[in-house]
Amino acid sequence: MNQAYETSTFANFELATQAYDHEIVASVLTNNGEVALFKRSQMVTGDCGLWHCITGFLDRHNCPSTHVRVEIEEEANIAPANLKLINSCRFYLNDSRNKTWCIHAFHFETTTKEIAVNWENDAARWCSPGDITRLNTVSWLSSVMSALKVEKHMGVAVA
Image 1 (cartoon, helix red, strand yellow):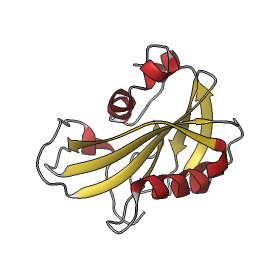
Image 2 (tube, helix red, strand yellow):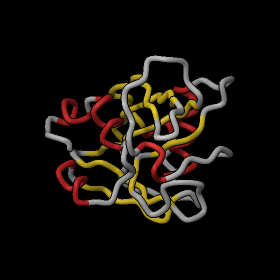
Image 3 (cartoon, rainbow, N blue to C red):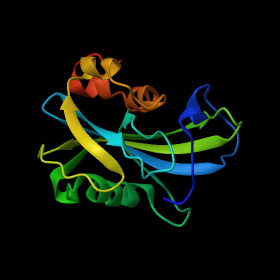
Image 4 (cartoon, rainbow, N blue to C red):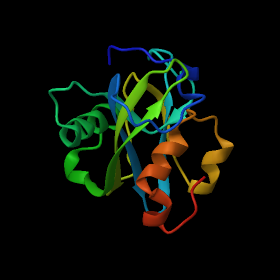
């Protein structure tokens, strides 16, 4: 990841319809009714110390569905063979600097709860969807969860 985004970047987002400035992948991992969250380390360029799903910048020459699996393996040490795709979508957000982000979002059910984080995250945890609102999360995590309809696929309400 070589581009920076700040904690406040998505503070005042709204759905965007114009061309985008940045492109990323975002992945929500679930296992038996729980969601995996990752606490961003001080070594990343933005949202340090906040809980989030797995994300990564996407080079325009890369396939989103391939690249998201690379990010999951790098950040959580979960092999693609342990992932079952539940849903995916693409949506757009405007940040507080009037930049538009194209987000390729994916929801995977994993066959394992074993996570080994790399330098991009300080910790990982599994939690029930209802507990997410009690955590200090990246401001647009709920947008990713909603766009993917995670609550529908898990059969529970997600904040």
